[in-house]
Image (tube, rainbow, N blue to C red):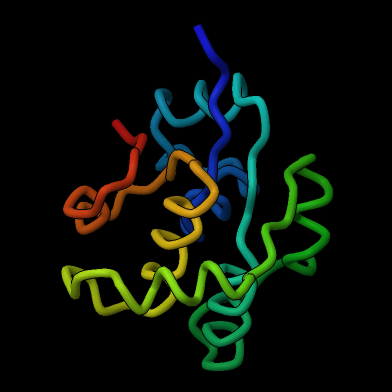
Amino acid sequence: MDRLNLLLDTHAFLWWWEGKPRLPAKSREAIDGAETVYVSLASAWEVAIKASQGRLRLALRFEDGIAESGFKTLPIAFPHIERVAGLPLHHRDPFDRMLIAQAQTEGLTLVSADRHFERYDVKVIWA
């Protein structure tokens, strides 16, 4: 079986990093067995906004969490931005739309509980 290259949705990364049981076993197994696991800079941006609004508090810097997890950072590039422009408006959250565009552009499988993702041409893992 081929090992997957994954892109974690913001909540999936946070639940992984914090060891939360809300991350399903199927998702944990996929992350453990993945070839490469990416966390988008869009997630870092989303977390920064939520932290500035007092809606989220992290014990460490988000960047440190990615490094500690052994995951790779996925920058936002022009092809990702161009892909966002062509996405149908099934989902209006700009951060999630960027994750969808990145997954499509880079051929990645998303790890997310967000059911809106299933309406797009993108592979999604959750339980």
